[in-house]
Length: 268
Image 1 (cartoon, rainbow, N blue to C red):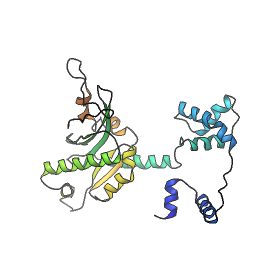
Image 2: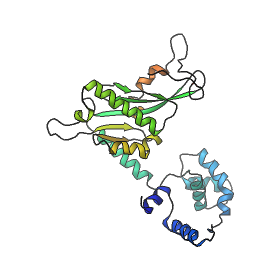
Image 3: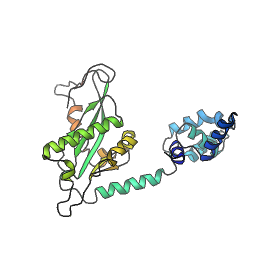
């Protein structure tokens, strides 16, 4: 990987990287500029940012100044950067790009199977106080739950495993490969199956992205957080509704002890 790409991912300026490199090669300590104002106001700025999470650093700075804290807006921004409470610069551009992809996926409502799948994690709390993660994959048209594995974590590995299980289930129902079902019979071109997920960490990972790069008949569309269940009627979470609902007589369903225990959940 080129150094520029690595530094972009890590969020380190190139000048800072090469300064560290020269200092290491010459055997001299790296000088770091003191920031007493930032360090002094770090806990205060973090407290305001967590209380008013919908506001940016300028409004946080205005609140602090109104309460008598003498600090500049740039110092507040640096403090929030240290606490990782600032959205990236291109956040709004990314949201617009995701919204455009989301609208294109549903501009023409799918009329047949394997055009759009919805996928989402949901957390299930057991009577013993533990938690399980259920990753549902549902076809948008048929409302068929192709996979709903139960795991102790909600990582990219679990998401990929759920998607693999859904593909295997779809191929078993079709009697042939899913890639063959995504080929347009009139033109012979691939009409990719669109997998709609939210903007969670598991679906933003590099491993999940590589899974789609290796399969040209799949297309990943990310939406804002909680968008699939809220915007399109809870399609990805409908199979879980019966599991999460109370049983007749007021008894709560249970899947064992959960992540905090040692029991293994039954297959859904």
